[in-house]
Length: 300
Image 1 (cartoon, rainbow, N blue to C red):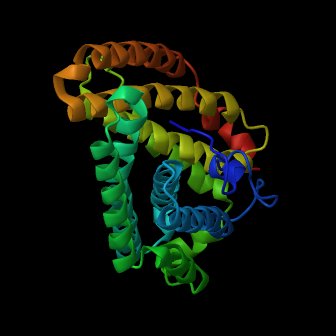
Image 2 (image 1 turned 180 degrees about the vertical axis):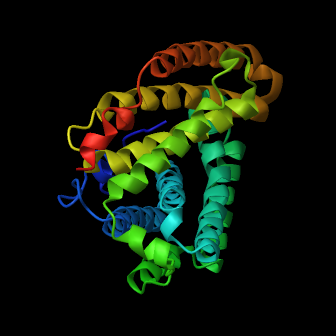
Image 3 (image 1 turned 30 degrees about the vertical axis):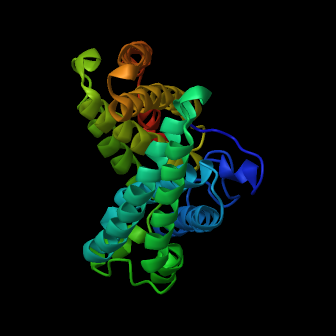
């Protein structure tokens, strides 16, 4: 869920790459310049949200930190042809550690939010608060607050970039060339789930949702670089699918944590959300992906 909250820069807390693109994200930007711009935005958001998590208890903190960590990992994957594999893996692994730690808090926040007021016992609320403090301490022990600054420094110093001839040439190419290949790969990952959509279990549905997120994030990253892009509608439909599968996932998490008491309601929620998501998926499958519409014309 993408809840909006009052308080600490609430407007920015809910923003996406598509909502607030920097002015210099336009066709013709080089691969390296585009990567620097996208990464700087991701790191700035992660930095702010980690500070929020360490200081405040609102559920939006862990949620938004995880959103931007996933965006960051998606960006690292998309630009992999110009990045050093070992250095990138180190930052990806650290991002995923923070992501997993905050996931434990996030699951319990979802549970509390979905519980009727009468079932939110003081004991359960206190257990979630203790978990939040434990995760905060782990993040402090691991200097998670320095994760984004370390990554930005590796980019500014150039140590994250490959230095071989092919990668050096690609870094100076228009970003559209790398973008089309990255978008094709992300779309292929989504297409793996095209068969028996309605029969997928919780695990495969969760994997499908992750692939949809990566596809949407790459669409947000790269759409500004394509003149006359028709990406907006595609992104909206991906978001709708992602939200529906998120509703199904949250229902499964609640059912797993509460047991039989939430069984029937959770099953009904999952079934309805998955059916609606499948309708959108069929529509997307019948359409030409936005970056494949006259792709050559964009490169001249």
